[in-house]
Image 1 (cartoon, chains in turn brown, blue):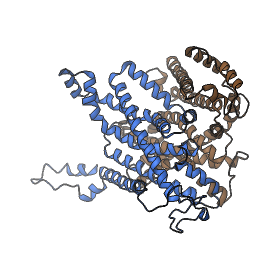
Image 2 (cartoon, rainbow over the protein chains, first blue to last red):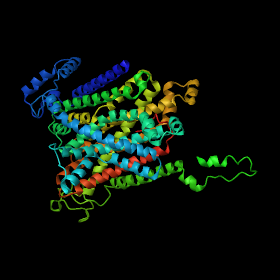
Image 3 (cartoon, each protein chain N blue to C red):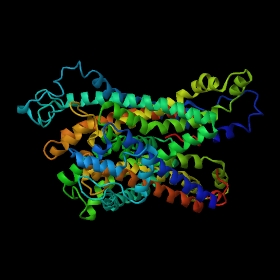
Image 4 (cartoon, one colour):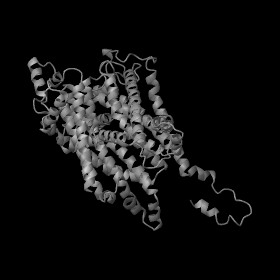
Amino acid sequence: MLRYLARRVGQSVLTVFLTVSTVFVLIRMAPGDPAAAMAGPNPSTEDLNRIREQLGLTESLPAQYWIFIKDLLGGDLGTSYAFRAPALDVVLDRVPYTVTLAISAIAVTTVLAVPLGVWMARRADTKRELGASIMTIAGQSMPDFWIGVMLLTMFAVVVPVLPASGFTTWGGLVLPTVTVATLQLALISRLVRREMAAALASPYVTVARSRGVSERALTWRYAMRNSAIPVLTALGTRFAALLNGVVVVEVVFGWPGVGSLVVRALETRDYPLIQATVLVTASLAILVQLLIDLCYPLLDPRVRLGKAA
Amino acid sequence: MSIAAEGAPGAGARPEPRPSAVTPRLMAKATATRRRRAARLKLWIGSACTLVVVVPIVLAGVLPLPGPNEQDLSKRRLPPLTDGHLFGTDQLGRDLLSRVLHGGQVSLSIGLLAVLVSGIIGIVAGAAAGYYGRWVDTVVSRLLEAQLSLPLLMMLLLVVALFGPSVTVITCVIAVAQWPEVARLTRSLVLVEREKPYVAAAQVLGLRKFAILIRHIIPNIVRQATLVVLLLLAQAVLLESALSYLGAGPQRPFATWGRIISDGQDYITTSWWLVTLPGLVIALLVIGVNLVGDGLRDRTRRRTRTEADR
């Protein structure tokens, strides 16, 4: 158990380290003067020299990397060009909004995808299941920003029942959540279907059925418990992908989160800000995944006893 | 299930074998038949959707359409089916169908190139990890695990911001975003394949490890790996359109799907077609490709559940 914990934490630290290093390499590899890039458009010579000094560009590469890491650990990710404030603070101000949207999307997804997946597994290879399967493929094939704009048109313009943008009332949460959840719903329900179909076809279920265990208990108590871990893992891994969707959807709905921030930073070429969003969202995704992985021992005695590979 | 049981008890007493109790109607209702029929249906619908989009895109230069950037300010925002504009015109009087088709050329070529690159990287890295094991496996597996657990879109936006939104950069960015999928599948396929007798036979014959991998193992797994690549093409098209929607797509004069939609969004209250139609085209293409991929996968499904396909 302790070894499992240590290994998972170690992996997360490694992932953060890889992300940070990649960002460092990217910034150094970018064409042109990094100082000019950091300074934004039309910098003066003094600005450039000052930034070069700050970045320690006169030092050797390993030394530069060391400085970069040291700044990161101190929470210094540079100053946002557009906001004239520490980039990290600007991003952290927006994080709660993004997290709210992500959590509500994942809640809606789970509540709908699990029953749908179970339904599909129990009616595997029937006509209705084929229909549902084609529907889920359609759900995962539509561009999320387009779904967003369409929902926006339908429910905020044609039939104005919900607010079109921003986050002033809880009603504003509905459309973005539905948009993000559509894609995830399709993917997770297909996963649940596959896992459940395999579990329902396995010998222990047949044995339990022959002993007269009810179909309901078979589904939820026997098969579900064994399908829970792969599904939970997928939810953890998908959280990163979900954040991708959230970024796009935030732009559609003018949601005041990290996503709309990064797109504005992109327009103004605000590199410190983009860099800060990369690191903050990456840490967030890694943290969520770590938390989910730490739930395994609760679900799977094999992990608890340290037998899982 | 019950059919076999019914025939069994009396079988020994009768001199003549009874005709099979399995009627054609039962055959048609059997799960295996239904599964095959479902796969065929998906393949047909999928190919139809894909072709409906791809053929006009390929022929966009030949079709009698106005140029994608030809403006006619007197014909702004005409609704579909007026004045020979099948999809109507946009806010600058440009023919929407022509823009969508030419945008499709950009999106499709970026998608195909990206998938080709990520397929090659993924198959090489995955095969090396699965076959050589040890530290190669550790490095590749950690890398792809790390990448899969990150919200990559931010990173991609950073790259595009740093290196400029050229077609090359965007293609590379999408390829890098997608290699883990191929690598993971290839690795799991190779892990199964390398335990098979023919590999041992090749070793006994004195072939070197590298030669066995290239000449014997990879040809055996490449078909299954390419199936995933097809699904990746759909994702690549979606990713490209999302990037260009966010303003990180190929710059003007290219009309890209994402930008057509983000431009049209400003006129959504008055001109519904500017967003709806391009979106439908993207959705149709991606649904088509996904259905074909899914159908092909159902058809060739004979693996265990551990090799989860995604």
